[in-house]
Length: 479
Image (tube, rainbow, N blue to C red; front, side, top):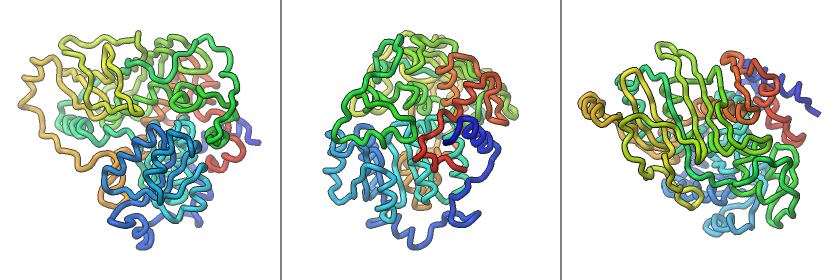
């Protein structure tokens, strides 16, 4: 049995940059695209052959969006709840696709049929599917956040570096929309510079739970639905008895399975700030407010402060994250009207509900203040008088050549590079992992950016890796 000490030692070794063992048939081998594999990728009508893992609710939405690109050929469908009403629509729409309940079986029996994998499963199960895909030479697109733990993201970053010919993309869709190109153009032109403070917020109604924070145990055991392979749903996590409040979207609120509001929305709100201001990892994380704090699920509202050091010629920067209905941050003078953001897509078939303040951000620099939304929403300079003054100085912003999903598929075909590969989305997800550890421990974290260790709290440091995976899942974590 792998002990926590051994597992944490592996995490430290991973942070030091050790290569993986056993991830290629020969030492140093890399995955290359042969003429035969290219023919499989393009399939018929110049489409990429894809296996979809997770095909209900959000997974169904993602599948449909991939089909809209005109570049996707659905060859395999996998879901642990195959046969349930929420997965039946995808199966009925693709009668020729092979179906599976276990992604490991899918790779074994149908791996030759596809060259890309799309993962839309709960957060806790992202890592083993993505790692197996990369080690199998399959391109992989995964919904955000990348992983549930810091160490899992670290391993996927290393795997993506080890296999440079495998295309990776995390599904923060706005990273291929207008805000991405505007932020880069404004940064390159010196419009966005000397940023010292960012306020980020998601204060819309929480859609995943309304439980009592005084909870003292997990929900009681209930019968497992006939269609559900509960053991495979649990993935590498220690065994939990089934309860309906772990399934569907409910998993998102539990520390054992999800990443809360921060992991759910952070990648849509601070992604451009993180990439183009070269933030990397914070050196300090402070949980300033945790209303309804408990050991099992995320607080009802949170305020979390992330402190980033000086980077090259850029000054130190602090991001303060707010979530919760009663936790609305102050906005600067001249903010303007609060209207429902049209750029925010529906959530599992339902539109997001209005709130006192929409999901978004305010960016404070030495001379300018910027107001921004979520996903692909563009920035505006506030107040309006300052915006008019700056109008003539603003650079031309190029238009996107492809949406986020088409960008992934075009990269599979060698025509573009992905905009949110694991080398970019991995460190972003690690920021959220550190924020979640601060929520879970309710304590300030001091983080060493070089060693990638929490230095002031051994228990919090152990959460970088989390509990060891179950024995049958350990192979995905071996170095």
